[in-house]
Length: 424
Image (cartoon, rainbow, N blue to C red; front, side, top):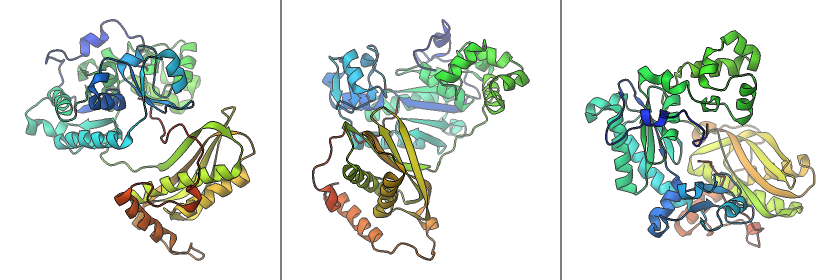
């Protein structure tokens, strides 16, 4: 459900905290904290003169995408993951900034430290949002869940100069809905006893897992609100949309969500991708980009103490047709050259010719480096990994360009931005 979705009149006012007063929060141990237009807010913190103008953060080239937009920019229709060129047409007077990910990560670490100072049960979802289970911290803090939410909001602003919105509820699903509905800079509490009163008037798009296509399908079947889904007998719903989806949505529509906060989640994949300013046919150039992306991805693996078994590449052609190709290695690796050789071979043997606008590398099947080590016949020779570890140390001291593969020292194609946009 988009935050601008049409909601029943008065629903926000009924559950939103105002002037230090909020609904009964007994039993509402789940909090979802979501930073408000995080990247844009951090940029405005650094440049306060931008507070009164639309600000857009993202790729500033012709094929860049929006990473974040402050709420003044959103009034003109600018949204995350939108092409920057489209955003410029909607808001030509906005200030457009390239992202500073090191700065955002620094602020994120500080914000997450505040969360963990309150409770060890913190489940980060990204740099700018997390679930918290505060049930065990209430007595120590002498606060109710709503009080904890207000404490978090005040500490985040005092320590880091940015705002966040907090949803307080008895389940993760309801808490996340609530935080989205009280943006920006708000708190919403959904009492356990009023969960269905809060949930049932919402459109079906509010249900976790319902995208635009599923919402349209449900509406075609006469199911426009969450209450409609809840009132539909489960056997009939199974026949309408399939067993797995029916059971999932029927449970959520009844307010059932038994997921716990998981403090440590293992990463499933690490990778990087680039969108070119102009389309490229040259396979030699594409292989150099694969080397660059393999180097970045392998560096991330080593920094996090991970190895990966499966290497995949992603290729998007000029007509936006997108394909992925993958191969599983006999031994898990974090070595740039091994990842690159596999990626380049996938490009050469499994990708048809054509003009390429985006290319990416991703490593999956991750495991801790220690547990990933094993001896097999014909294992790759040692040497590359030690050299790359030494290069990592040099780059950490002297900058990211201190040591590079020789083939990357020449001219490189113009790219829009070095990130995968995360829609806010």
